Length: 132
Image 1 (tube, rainbow, N blue to C red):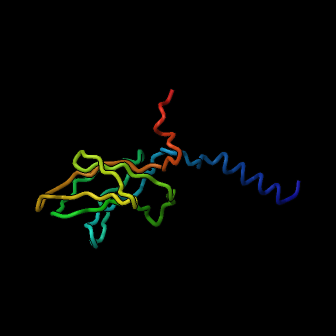
Image 2 (tube, rainbow, N blue to C red; image 1 turned 180 degrees about the vertical axis):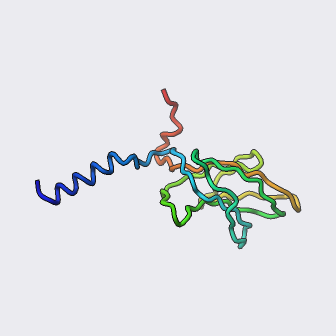
Image 3 (tube, helix red, strand yellow; image 1 turned 90 degrees about the vertical axis):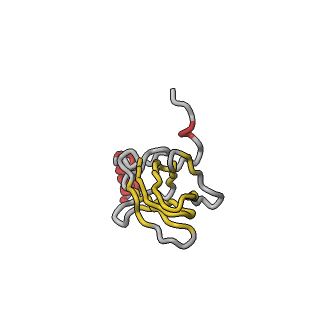
């Protein structure tokens, strides 16, 4: 066996046994969840996902429109294809056409409860299939 072929075989074996497979719908832990006022408000971290990819945070807000985004910390490797499921005060928030999660706050000052989950994006819709 040539040395190049041997190297390719070893890399393939290492990847196969490392457990580093990326499966759609798997939770991503350690992802920062950021909240910012729209337009122009700087986003700040309000929560970090747990081992199940879940987060919750009660946040003090004022009247206006807010965006929620996710980011991986610089010390963490995070799949670029991640998906956020978000609820604000129990109501589901879906991304707009640009993929931005926006929600309005009508009260002049108060708190909102953010809950959700960050997971690996399921490009083919397999996570919605029923398991047998």
